[in-house]
Length: 219
Ligand code: ADP
Ligand code: AMP
Figure (cartoon, rainbow, N blue to C red):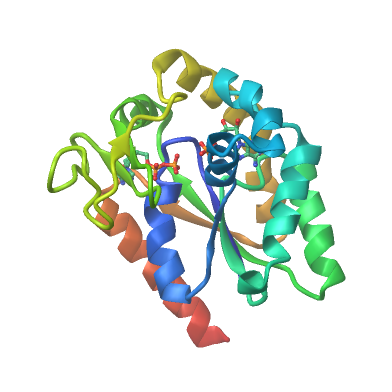
């Protein structure tokens, strides 16, 4: 089963991905994490993506789609995965559908985490991420037990370079212009599930798990 996590930057996709991955026993495929990994390792992909990421813009579709299709060709994605941050444009969504269709597969659901725009800036400026396992924390909303240290793997927490106000504003603009149309795209296919992301992290997770269990029962 292939799931997509949709929502604005800061909506809680990375936070909730963990729960879905465990509930469905599927790998987590986060395009932003893949790009940051490539950047850190100085690969050709990282060099291609760097300037776009720094500016808060989208990496061109050709580069992004190729990276994702290579990732899902790996055996751990044979039975599906949880996409996080991909697709972000209609062309990416169509390319993904076409690639899955060739293998007789399709998107099961796009889970849209709905959060008012007014909440996003605080979530993103207060976010800290683990350098090792990418788990997101928030200085007030979900602080780690020990400051600067990941609860899960003891990795170092850091603030992403693009989580500063100026870049966040650009990323939100890009989201509303280029990614919001995907809601309509998946809704028309009957594949959209909306969850209220403006509740406590645990409650958002509970709502998603309830939905997934219902889905499994129908199978
Ligand atoms: P995304 O992956 O959609 O960009 P994250 O999962 O990284 O978003 O969450 C962004 C920030 O908001 C993180 O600091 C996270 O701890 C915090 N956060 C996530 N979900 C909630 C929530 N329901 N309420 C408050 N803060 C949240
Ligand atoms: P994220 O970690 O999802 O917030 O993504 C961080 C950055 O990586 C974005 O601002 C983009 O520059 C780039 N990126 C991630 N996913 C995509 C995508 N699907 N399409 C284009 N660029 C992306």
